[in-house]
Image (cartoon, rainbow, N blue to C red; front, side, top):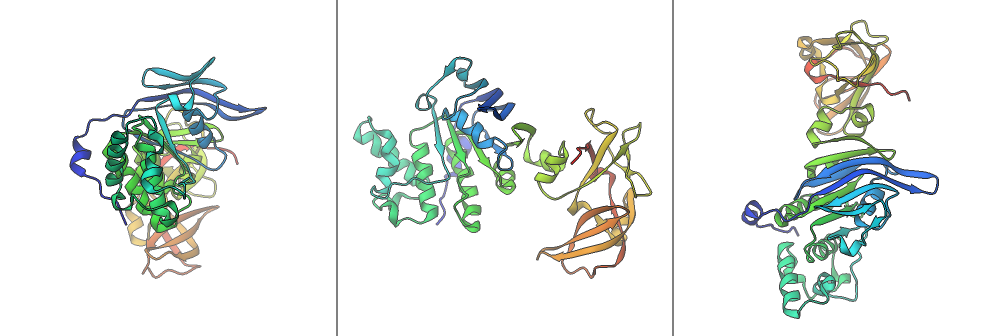
Length: 372
């Protein structure tokens, strides 16, 4: 079962979410610095994802925004109110924030409507019923209001958790890997439903995940974290097409990375074992120095006659061919380097073939080289 969002309401509703600003946030656990001075801003109604591997500090940052962890240094501001800073820690229930966790925490002894309305204690019964009914209709669970938690599927329980989080009308909604307990098919469906719900109600959202597909498909912007620091903060398309570091290139999608030496014009990279320099259409950014790497995506690599029109053309040997249904994943050796490419699944190619491969200069850009 999927939920249906009123698109007319979504298009015309005024944004009600809060702005959120994190400045030089640091979080210590004894001698361990889990978050090392990160900064980012979120606009009202924006959907921002904290993305990164396990241990990068993303969940710790989220918990600090929620008020569940104290900040060791830096500030967190919601709208114009500082909720965390030097000598200040506003309690979670006073921040105007709700959080959706990995665990649905649906109480099995309560009905759906009781679960959803639990956070509305203190309001008049009529007001509670009105709010609960509105939210259940919004997420498509109106006819399940009298069911108990044990009678719901995993996806339905996740919707109950979402309804409970938005029924109190928070200005900021936090998600801590909420889909990790769902199977792949339901996880994909819930991605779109969460985003549709966030757009409909206008809440500012901060979403934590290590899943790049979730981050790329749902977010207005992605903050990529690595070892407690911001690696890159950009729109998903920009992070994918123009990663600023080798880590960003490797973490999001499949990137080819060729380390070498940048020339004085900052447009050509000499790579050991490759006879001709790698050419890019744009000069390297100011933070890229002589020791640099050429980055390009596997799907941009050309092979055979298609490669001959590219600015970068190399003879290559086929080292591995993997059938992935929609395409072949091909590993080539070029001089001393290995590069990956994608070919249509019906392409006749076998290990050991010698082929011509190429990459357009417009599909190459340079990033600082990082020693392993």
